[in-house]
Amino acid sequence: MRWCLLAVALLLGACDQLTPPERNETPQSSTPGLVGSAARGAELAQRVCAECHGLDGVLAQGGAPFIAGLKQEYLVKTMLDYRQGGRHHAVMMERAQALDSLQLADVTAYYSALETPWRGAVADRQSRAVLDDAAAREAAAHIVTGCKSCHSRASEQQQDQPIPSLDGMPLEYFLPALSAYAEGRRSNDTMQMFKDRLSEAERYRLGAYYAARRPQVQQAAAIGSPQRGRSLAQACAGCHGLDGNSLNPHMPNLAGQPAVYLRKAIADYRDGRRQSPLMAGVVDRLQDKDITDLAAYYTRQRAQSALHVNLDTMHQFDVEVDGRRAAAACESCHGETRPKGVPRLNGQSVEYLVHATLTYQRGERKHPAMGQIPAFYSDIQIEQAAFYYATRPVANETRPAVEIDAQALHACSNCHGEQGISADPTQTPNLAGQDPQYLLQALQAYARGERQHEGMQNAVAKLDLAQLETYADYFAALPAQAVKTFLPDAPQDIVDGRCSMCHLERGTVSTPGVPRLAGQLESYMIAALKDYRDHRRDHAGMTAMSDVLSLMEIQAVAAYYARQ
Image (cartoon, rainbow, N blue to C red):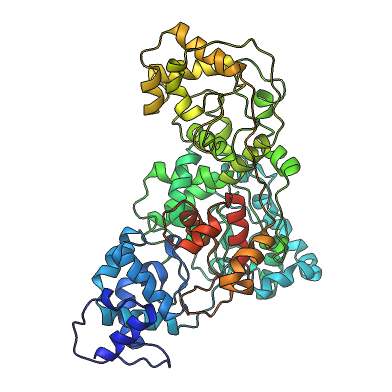
């Protein structure tokens, strides 16, 4: 009985952390080198793990990672981390604490022994062949003519009716969907017309035609909150991708689909008109407003097609091209000819600019224009615009110096510095050279409680208008200084210089205690890297590797490994 506990403990170097066994039996795994019984582990997995990870270890419900075939040492260590609070996830902590040591050995033996392929973001070979199969696409021309009356972007019917966009839809999803209509497993009066008209070969040609097309941009939904929809979409990321671009070709893309179609499809799953084991439990509790907000979020996302992406290369951020494009909507106010009362963004830190923009996007700060423009920006676009302004040259305007009492200035200089240069510009903005009218408006907003910040509200609570004007003029007259900004590294340099040291080339590591990354779920890796960067997960090596990564770099690294 005790030999298996000792083996697991030795694997982890954590003998004193294991719960004493509750069963007088010696687990034996059918797979050499594993501790525990994979057969008993399968029974446990059905009750404890399958809801999120599936019995095959690759369900990825709600963004849960693929775990099939991971080393048992790593799986056990992860469960112990959840059990002891080293990693934070309410459900995982509950499940880990409910397992005794023998059960822990059994369930990890089961998942470690699985050989289920990780689908990641790799399109199947059948789908890859579509781009080279011009003959198949040409042969579908007469079929496509009948589809365009409904599925064409130019069709007025598609704008008002719940009809999906098919351009760029993976062949692996498209063909089973067509077959479901042909075989009566999905019902639609119009689609029933094609039930007996398309042969299997014609279905393939039709799927090839649409899979090879680039996705089209949809009109934004007139109703719903995309910001709230983004939060709700976290539960869908495991199957449909973080932004609605599915990383699994067997799952449909939601990004860029017409909002009216998305609303109907989600409601049909919720109300039982469409059936799917994967959707069950995810949409059951959604209210009509939730569905409307989800649709508003997904229809605003730019659809992508894996067939039109070079999976072996990663685009490096270009501040003049990508940054300028992301900042285009901001330039009319924050450009070189700023109106009075508009803050200067040039030279501020990327982190602060991102944080400030998100407070407007979330509605925590109120402004007529800023409440509208960032609403359509993704987190990546916000960061790209922030890099653009952080690297723009700072031009000082000549203003008369303002005398101010050093003791009175103390309340400001603690955070913003005596010369208006913050000691930590990632959290506190530089005020030197800022627009005086904007500074005055901001100070007044804090004094009235319209902007929330306990320190700022306390600092200005007892100041009258004349004093607020003096502070604003003082900082505006100081010489501005740009925050030193490091542009994102080339994604391949990050992978080669940092990640490969532990995870080896392409993330196909076999070292005990280090997880495989090749083919892992992209949305999960993004969340994990952000947790390491922001110190929500404790690991000295991972924190050191990720604490300076931008969201663009994190996404690029995750995309690289997901596509291996």
